[in-house]
Length: 216
Ligand code: B16
Ligand code: MG
Image (cartoon, rainbow, N blue to C red; front, side):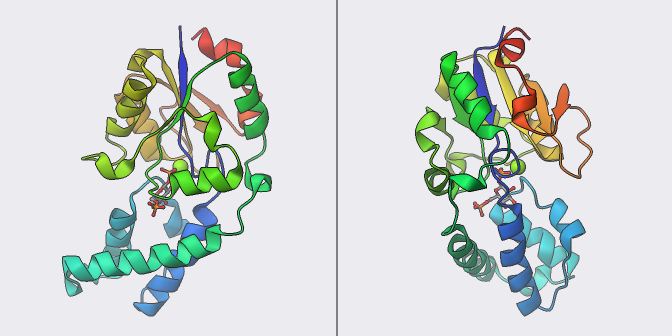
């Protein structure tokens, strides 16, 4: 029996990947590195600094920058990204999210967020759903990013449930690996990626029945 739901943010609740892409592409262009949407797929669920590292490696420029310079570049990207987030509204919730969260709330299912994004609380505020989550894990307190299970284990702990009592929702392959490594039931929210390893895959959250998930 399941008792709580733990959601990834980008790709499950809202599509911020397109804004990450615009901001990363702008920075990459300035650095003389050409990235495209296909490359962007592998940045999903990956932390800000690790994303920058992947871009620099892709462009063969990883060794050209010091740690401090890399931090400054990541900060520059984030400034642009946060600018793009200013216009987010509840209309930017992915289809089916609002209905599913309402169904979960009607059954008093505690919900948490396990997002690699340090902008998570701000994004949830903009989407008008922050109050629906009793737990939002702060990714800056974690030692390891997805695919390590740490963020999902922390969310379960903070929700006061066992990992085996949690259902995790993810759109990224690294996130599905993290949920399964945490010993949870994994729902994959499918985009273009093939989500191998998920217990169940849907294209939108309102395809799911809260009662059926709780009975897993
Ligand atoms: P930030 P998720 C992830 O969100 C994004 O998928 C990933 O592209 C991004 O680099 C990461 O958050 C960090 O975001 O720069 O805002 O801290 O999918 O884990 O909700
Ligand atoms: Mg995601």
